[in-house]
Image (tube, rainbow, N blue to C red; front, side, top):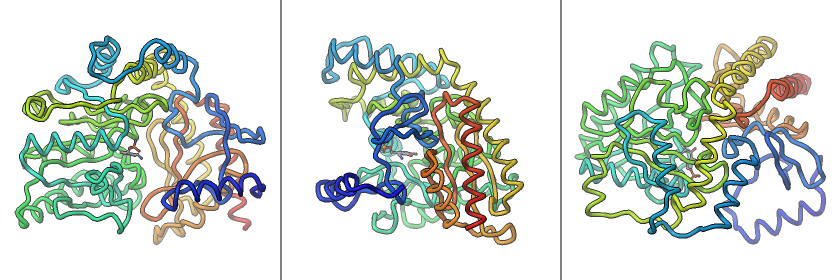
Length: 429
Ligand code: PMP
């Protein structure tokens, strides 16, 4: 479907008003207007299966979340320096989903801000500056956390306080080596940092390595690296912006799949199902001195509406059994993709946990060379046929599949049929 004149005009106005830094998805950008559950509708009333959006994670415009937000919005919304039950109830309920040592949670509005405050607290507690992240990590957009986001590319400067290590690679590194290799690489990075007079404050990872290409397996591989950073006097920060809130099916948090307990956990995206809500949880002693000396005030973070949104999301995950659904429908989807992979040799690998799946496109099984052209073709073919995903990873060759957690089996089948048709069309191209 070619863009019509209205869309072309809107793109021009958008570029003129918003400037050159913004990007749109797809060769033919999508002009959406309305959403419900796992579906989006464009301005011409055409329906799309959203298999990408982990913001509206409990489903677009979920009535319980919408009602909670609207009720609170029409009752009270203000800054966060009054006594209000909402934020306390929510904090208690959120902390109850985490292991005991994580005893405090502080609220922010974006994932970037959650990582930013976690970083400040980690540096102030350890009185150290160094941070280790994976080579293609994304942890946010502020001046401080953009440094921790090498996936932003060469233009974003990085000080010598930040060191990069290879992410795991489920396709190219044997399963048994993922954990030991990560720890060895971390040890090297720490040694190099120290050679420059910098001590490690923290090792921070997205526990499903989303921007590194999605590497969930084998569950448990994080343990040696976590042990190592602690032995070296640094903290382990789990960025749960991507895997958190039941997405991975078998556990509520991504770090739980690895059997580790982080010193800090940061979260965002699905937390308010689209309402800006994020946070950082931590062991209480980490924030003790910071709390006394630096204080914390965030005008919007955890305001009454945000707390209501967060609470409603937790309600829906529990009441609709979305974690179990993510495990069940995720397994169905993964098996279906693995079956499709047997027919298309350029599908190098299918992996994932729960409703967070990746299909890696390669040119051959001998070289494992990324096939970004194929990934691009499949993403755009799906979009033309009413299914939305995207591609990620170092070679832009890894299809990222991340539908709302309430995805049903019939919708998953629809997805499988569409992706199979896309690979078939790519073969004939
Ligand atoms: N951490 C991770 C792992 C993310 O994927 C993102 C967003 N893509 C962020 C942090 C930053 O979140 P936000 O865009 O809400 O600032």
